[in-house]
Image (tube, rainbow, N blue to C red):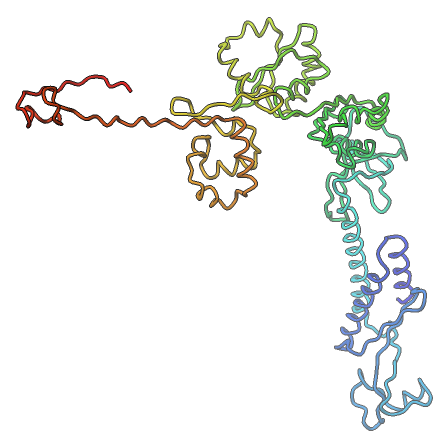
Length: 488
């Protein structure tokens, strides 16, 4: 039994990657449980390992008593027996008495073995789970081992990962011991260990590859706005820069395309379109349809996020892409429903000119601060301006909507103390909103025309009179009043 436990320690530490302290603590708990099962207590059980932890002994700490006073077999040892174990001992001394594991009954031994195996399995599972759970959302390198029902099993060192068929790119073929870079999609506990689910199709794999190859992305000088992908065919990635002196697209492509080519080789030649993110949806849609050249973008319905992209006849197939792939990825990237039309097709569509102008004006460059913006006016004779029509941060817009504030007029008519009383809107957000309104909205207050203070006098004598008089109280002349338009 000792030999088996010693071997278990070496196996757990060397092969399973479990910490030595945890293995030793588990073995101690198991032996104490077996000792208690046999003797009713484990308070005097002493467990000792040799220097290299290759073996373990179990002893009972017993107090030496006179032979005539010997009553407690578990905690005491008579003097005569103690002298056989250790010469020179005295009554009252404590002596460690070795306990042979053979003295345990068969049930206790079997229970200890089963508990040991189960504990080690649980320890290994928990250790592996913690190790790989920390790698969730990261990239990992493994080696192709085998395939079963289309799923690929990847050697990750201490365990196997599974690359399901749905997470495999159609471009890729593997052979035994091929190195595979994978994205760790999720880690979960399974009946027989830990299940590490890998992916080669996730857009996050592309994100991690760009972080490895483009230092400006790694240090956040350039940010990735969004990545959309149809693995094996095409990926679109929108980027923007925090610094004016860095071209985000050029940095991702690299000198002579070296950076992008490295990434494309890793995903077996899958095409990658790198484009610049723009907060103006018209510009963003135009960029998203690259490599096609777009002549114009028209917002047909801002509420349902529907837009038209107008292209030349020779650019139509390129904008739509094979089996609609290019425009489909552009839809996902922009979160807009984009219809691609030629000039001739657009001319045949029944869209009123004034509707086109309103849609174009709503998302023009001026509305996004790229040119001198002409403020919109709000007054008694104008339609109310929706706050959602202004470049207000979505989080702030949601807070205003929560307080049932949807238009500029509703906001500007609120008392100042009521605005400050909204606990979820900070002073900084109030200032931001004020600056946006100053820039984009010309708030015109209605002019109040006071009625003129009119005094009447008698035409005969000049004495003051009022409209309810029929004769002048001074000279007695008859009076008559007629309504006339008063002009200031």
